Image (tube, rainbow, N blue to C red; front, side, top):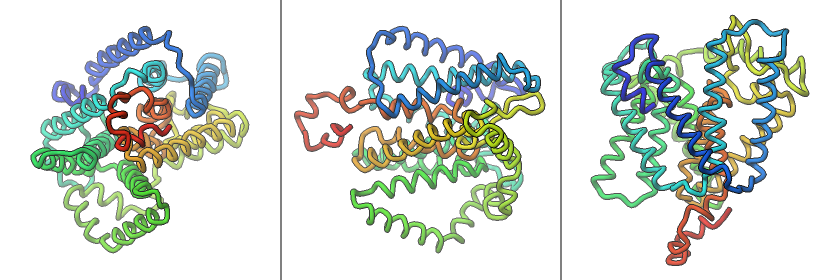
Length: 400
């Protein structure tokens, strides 16, 4: 997002690869160097991480079988096939392995600061380069940050920025000036997300807020009551919320409040049915690595259905374990106000996004963040001297 935002004005229609391909090559180089430097590190794999490695192993077998051995599949466009496979390795699999091998040396505070800078610059530059982000009033046009990001990616970018800005605003002691700046950036992130016109980031944001509220205290009943009150207040304020969205993003307002239930799933229902049919044809092992139609490889826009299509009941069981364990871990780190719970919230955002408009194998927010979150961060990324100096302050960080 940062690279395409900085060079967005220099990209022309159909030529975004002039920016994205060199960037992917750079990322691949960094990944290979990181793996080379850390390959000899002896790292124990927790149960949750072992499960995701098993899932990855089965996925690679399914992919290799479909793309190199099977003869009953339609011809697949070579460029699209190579692009999807490259994205799988560069965006998700290799980063997951690199994080697994080098997690001891990741400074969480620096990670937060650089993430905040990169994502804030992406949003600000995109809004000023694409002036429609400020001027748009059309009710039938969804907006994008640049030619390399579609409206869904743009909305998710705004939500990610909002999560990080909100974390900094509420979790760290800030000066009055910092609070004002962070609040302004959070408002900018919200407008950016809404103007994209995509419904997926709205759903992901609702899930993230629900997770935070359900983790406010150690008393689950109180948390449930707080969530119920918020839902009730939101329902009573629905008219105000609808008017606010209509003023900011008319296209999103139409898609949320005027489209019928059938319209909400229009375009995706066919993919859902394709995945279900593939699962029913081979319920134990699955049948297809991807949706094969019109010479291309496509995704069914739901990681649960996708796991059923690819790996049958085995894949479904593994995927449900990953999703449930991610939510449980997030509830835990948020309730203890861990210094890295913003990472857990980004993971929940990624999982929710992949339920509606994404997939597992190219979702950079799922596998790498999941692996990172379940490694024993507390034992390696904190100074023991800081803990000894104030053990009460850091007691939550000692809990694995």
